[in-house]
Image (tube, rainbow, N blue to C red; front, top):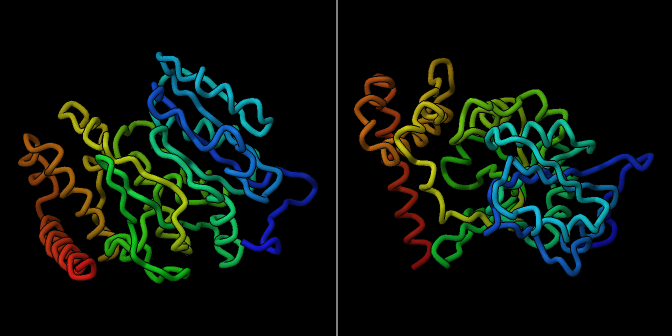
Length: 299
């Protein structure tokens, strides 16, 4: 990236904040290269900070975090365990920057990720930007999206459904003033960020970059899929009424995922969302179409 895209802030104000949540993440306490963290993380961006929020870890996670704290831009906060939404809200309240990026404990950034995301949001003149990322599972790694052009998405929900983008934590940058309007629901423990994301997607234009900026670790996807967690899952609180067609279809995709995660609760979910199950059928058809198109593309 050329030097003309170096991003600075006025009056030495904080410009970019990265908020990372950690809970018993001793396996995953890795953000980037320790030997050159400044260049690895920030590239040529100045006046930034990384907020590491330890959500009540009981292992030795803090010892793995300490080397990062030698860089004055890294800040460590310990709080009692309250869940990932509580930790994100905590980090959001501590953040001083104009823009913010969230990162989960088991995911990690790729080099110059912040430059790419900041350049995207500034060039396209939007409040939210998201970039491509790698999905890593069982040692295999694949790109999430095959969309190869930078653009402002015409319909955020449709783009997500067709897997042209996914506003994942770590791959998405927000104007902080936007996020504070939609705090994370601390009563939820799975898909906890979905409600806030849907609210933001409904109101904001989102720009997309094809350059991958992070690695999403999918290996532990099933850890929170326990029956006793159903009441704290976003799929138990879906609101279809009054939503547009593509948003309903995306809600149905989450519901289809719920049928898979909670097979013993499937009947209850079907009774709860009875008249909206037609969208689940449409989503299955769309998912099959996407699968076939990917297969043909990769032949």
